[in-house]
Image 1 (cartoon, helix red, strand yellow):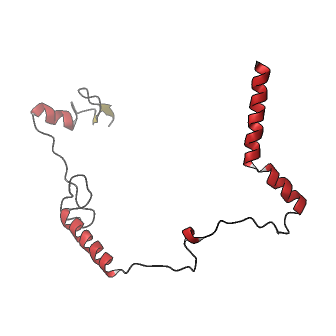
Image 2 (image 1 turned 90 degrees about the vertical axis):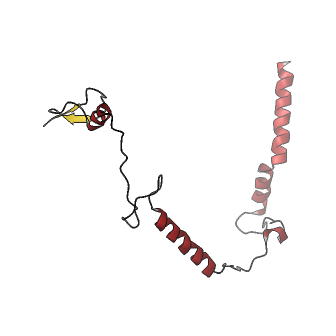
Length: 133
């Protein structure tokens, strides 16, 4: 059997031998649409609460278990042997490293100076403004 769209709503598919879909037939008869009840995903016995996937009783039971678990657990404090950040001194770069030779370190330090870069950009901007005038 082939399927076709319902001629009334043009949303639902029906078999070729049917006139209208189930939804349209219910509307034409004046019946209200009934919502299918979803069962609780935990116990599969009671209907789930609106907008939830579990029933009221299972939700209450989960809350009680969580409260009991929270009461039984002691807060875990880990001492890793470090001072708090507020009491630490600023970290200074280790310039006595064997990785970078002294001459290259000074070049790198000069290249990375933000103050100098800012001053250089200001000078370039001023020279461009003077040339435009």
